[in-house]
Image (tube, rainbow, N blue to C red; front, side, top):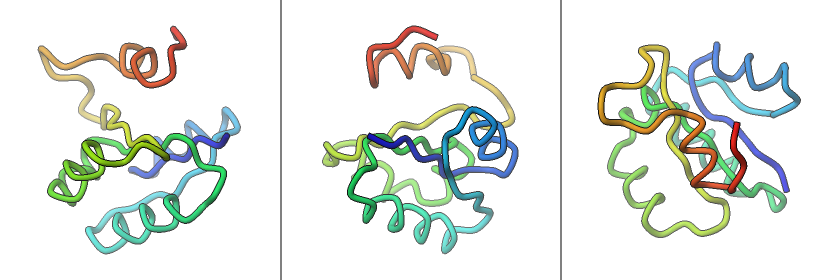
Length: 101
């Protein structure tokens, strides 16, 4: 099963260095297009979306996080980092796939 990243270019590049594919986006239209692309890939199991991009399409993200089972949609921290009270990237990965980073 594939993991796919939709987010700012630095996040996509960082995950690419670890062998994870993705698509950098900056606008609402690009974010929706990238999510559509990820959802159409039959072997995609998890789509990681950076919070800055998720804010561009918040209503859709809320719906996908509630209703999508495959692929699993997970928001990850954006360049600003993790805000107080929010889970870290390691905690999100642990919850999503059961692997501790």
